[in-house]
Image 1 (tube, rainbow, N blue to C red):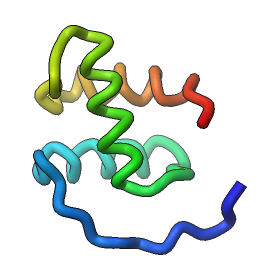
Image 2 (cartoon, rainbow, N blue to C red; image 1 turned 90 degrees about the vertical axis):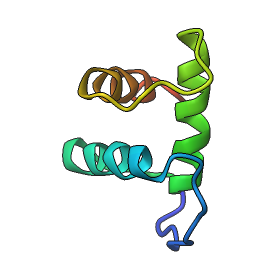
Image 3 (spheres, rainbow, N blue to C red; image 1 turned 180 degrees about the horizontal axis):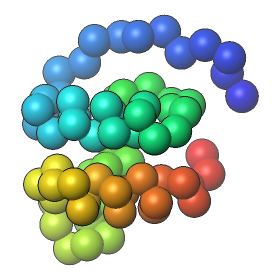
Length: 73
């Protein structure tokens, strides 16, 4: 496991959604991957729900956090 992940600014497809998603994840746990990886995983999560990108509602973000808690990279 990496001890430190250097912050690298990214151009997100949905920057406002990513801000909400990352804030939620940091408030409710410990984020161990880059924000770019979170975006990729959120897109993967969205696809499991038959969507290209789920709007970042509180319910979707909470469900994503639960799903992410089970993901191993």
